View 1: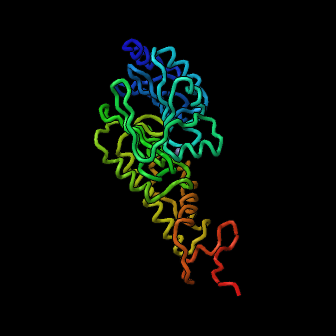
View 2 (view 1 turned 180 degrees about the horizontal axis):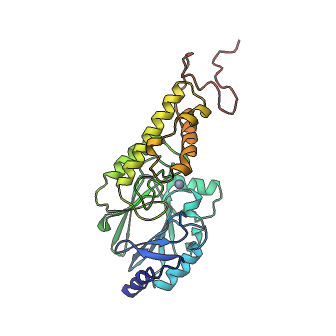
View 3 (view 1 turned 60 degrees about the vertical axis):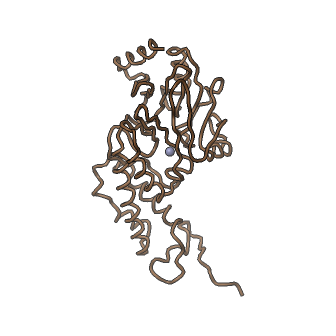
Length: 308
Ligand SMILES: [Zn+2]
């Protein structure tokens, strides 16, 4: 086992752009492969391996990972953990079904089955919290409610001070727009949960959903951005602004130093508007804020007059 780990560490010294495992802590490795593609983490123990997420994009996909783990280690993959249902994070993980038990949040399994996703169908699901004990290591799996999606979990190994928190932080920096789209999100609970994760004890390294490791500070920077974006979009909605006007006015220039600002600002504003449009209570008076009379696709739903 010790020999196997040494081989993996040695591999990172020769960076020729090919996928490889890079050691982050005593037992946690990250697969370095195509930039921007979703992260894969591997927990190595004497009694077996645990694979967390995967990508089908380019090199470093699950087929490559399976052969690489077979080459490096003489223990099988015992568990596969799916962080959430978004396809770019779980694609192809059924290659480990021959030896592994797959684990996810309860809602992840429902999405995977309903939409016939190209991944491993979870064998074990949980609602709030779960522990995995393997080879002397303990992994804590948390679900803090509906945040980025209605099934996103975090994986914490306190003994090694590492937290795997896909799609709640961006890697390689602490200030970033973390994802393009709020349509699947619960914005209020996302903001609360980012605060909770920023204060979680026993964390030095945060493995985000994409790119390299970051720190808990990234949760706070993203929380600030989301909270301000929500406030500004809501203020415009209440003033009766159209989405076209909101896109012009909500420029978030004070956050232009954030990574991905040029890439995702527009999709963030549009999808936040869409989320808030559906989330806010209908206003029944003829006040300027009575923006729920029609869906943006043009079908009125605001006919509150009782039929004759
Ligand atoms: Zn996601």
